[in-house]
Amino acid sequence: MQEYRTRKTPAALGLQHGKVRDLAWACFAPPMMHVEQAGITTASFPLTAARVAWLQALDRDPSSLMHWLSARPATRLGLYFEQLWQFFLQQDSETMLIANNVPVRDAGRTLGEFDCLYWCRRRERPVHLELAVKFYLGCHAPCVDAEPPAAYSWLGPNTIDRLDRKLQRLTQHQIQLSRQPAAQPVLDALHAAEPLREILLSGQLFAPLAAPLQPPAGYNHALPLGQWLPLSQWRSTSSGHWMIIPRLEWLAPVRTAPTGHAAQQLAEQLERRFGSGGRPQLLAALDEAGNERSRCFVAPDSWPNLQN
Image (cartoon, rainbow, N blue to C red; front, top):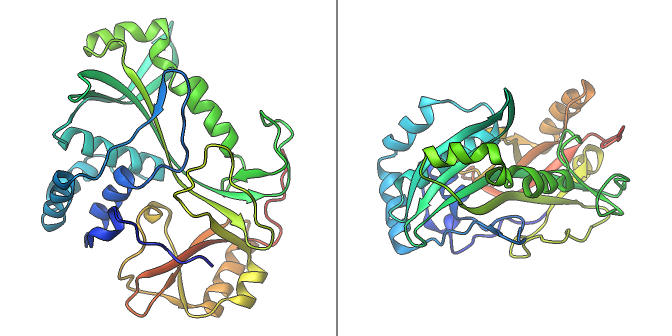
C-alpha cells in the first residue's frame, strides 16, 4: 500500500491540534479535481507565509476555531469541510465571508443554496464558491448512464455517490445558481451581484490494488492515487497495527492515535461489520508513535455489487 507522502504544504507544518490540521488540509491541500469551464475556475489559495503564521498561532490557541465548530456541530464530513472553509474565509486577510448556506427559492420551491459567498479583496469582486470533499473507489464495472460513457466507475463507499454524477451536479447545477433569475434579489441584498464562480472538489481516489485504473480526466496528478482491496486480500497481506479512521477524521493524516489493532484482530472486526451489510472502511496503518504511515480502503469481498 502506498505510503503517505509529506508535501511542502499542510503536512509539513508540524501542526499538533487535530482540528487545525484538518483546517490546513481542507484549505491548502491540492484539489482532487481541476474543474475548468467557461466562467468557472478551481478555487486556489496559496499557503503564504502569512497563512502559515496564522495556522501556527491557531495551533497554539485553537479556541476560536473550536468555538466556531461547536456552534453548529457537524455530523457529516461534507458539512464539517464547509465549516472549516467558512472559518478560513472570515479570518483570512484577503477575503471576507459574506454569507454561507444561503437558500434560493422560487414560488416556494428551493432551487439550491450558495455554499459560500465571499468578497475577494485582491480581485475586488464577490465570489460564489461551491465546496465538496469526496473519497471514491475505482471499480471496473461500467456506468452505462455516465456522460461521457466510461469503462469503469469511481464510486463512493455507498455506491449511490459517483464521481461523474458529482461533477455534473457541481458544474451544471450548483455553480449555476447565481445565474438563476430567482437568485438575483438574494445576491443584490447581500451586495454580491454578478459573482465570480469557483468550485473546489477535494478528497482522494482509490484504485483497486489487483487491477489498477487510470485516473479520470481532470484528476490532479499532483496527488497519488490511493488503493483499495477486498477484506480477504487485505487480511492475507497486512501486518502491523491499524485503525479504522472515523468518517469525520478522513481529512488530515492520523497523528498520535491512542489505539490501534493488530491486522488480524481488525480483520475480525471488519468481517463482523461487513457481515451486517457494512460499507468499505478507510483504514490507517500506524507507526509505533500512532502516526499514519499509509491509508487504504478495505471493502467486503462482494463490493460493489451494483444494483443501478
